[in-house]
Image 1: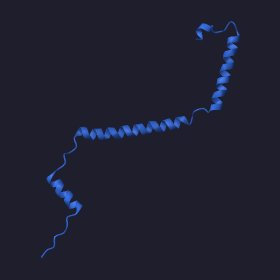
Image 2: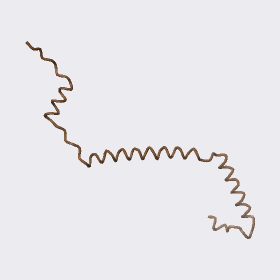
Image 3: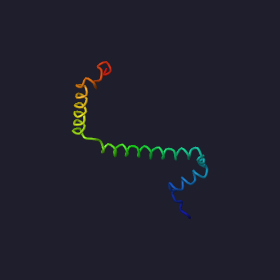
Image 4: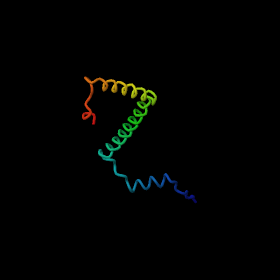
Length: 91
């Protein structure tokens, strides 16, 4: 007498796929999968570019120095009556 073996998960999956075939992906569906990959890659690239460019930003001390230097130039310009910017234009 032959002993019956218990079916494995693979056997059950093959039998299920035989009686219930899965529909094939359409062109539009596969195109969307490619679009998602493109968008994820683009997003990651822009994120990394943002981090890389932030390392080139000026530090606070250098920005303060530039502000003070430009303020001094503006005040010297305003002290000269011939080159003064009228007060109503500064508002």
